[in-house]
Amino acid sequence: MSTKKATGVTRNEILDVAWGLIAEQGADVSMLDIAKAANVSRQSVYLHFKSRGGLLMGLVKRADDRFAIREEFFAAMKVKSPRKRLDACLSAWFKFAKNIQPVANDLIRLRKTDADAAAAWEDRMTELRLWEKKLIDSLAADSALKEGWTVTSATDFLWASSSVQIWDLLTGDRGWSARKCSQVLRSTIATALLRE
Image 1 (cartoon, rainbow, N blue to C red):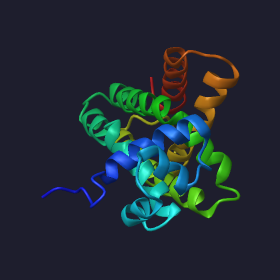
Image 2 (cartoon, one colour):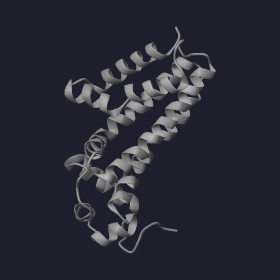
Image 3 (cartoon, rainbow, N blue to C red):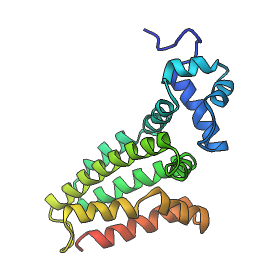
Image 4 (cartoon, rainbow, N blue to C red):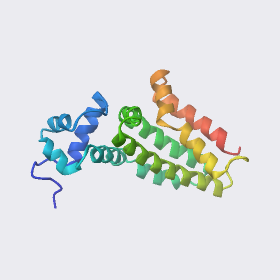
């Protein structure tokens, strides 16, 4: 059965148009702007998303699907060597961070003043922390964490040191290439967390 509504435009098509607009203009674009860009009525957008918050939540979850981050994490978690597993997970994450950076930056900027943006960002960060905790749990189970790290403190460190904000500072403000940024952060994180 088709997921298309009477407008003939699917939810994912609207999300993809919204992604492009937000990447170009910022996350404070209106539902009307998105409707115009998708060539549908504003009411059609509301039929799919009910609210701006629903659209933002759909948008960030669609990014997970578009860029296959879950599949990449699942594959990386199967790597036997703890050091290579950490590296594979971080490689997947930094590839994803590069793709989501324009939209993520605006959600970060708006989250202090926009409850919908804050909810969308918090939803994604909660899921990211769960993934990172699973990774750290696996490293701890393999006795690969350096002495002094608890699962909680190592997860906190991983979450902060691999954040989109750090990525943006290095690639945006300091002009590092995505490749250099990924390599340096992966190496630094591994050195900080793992036994030799």
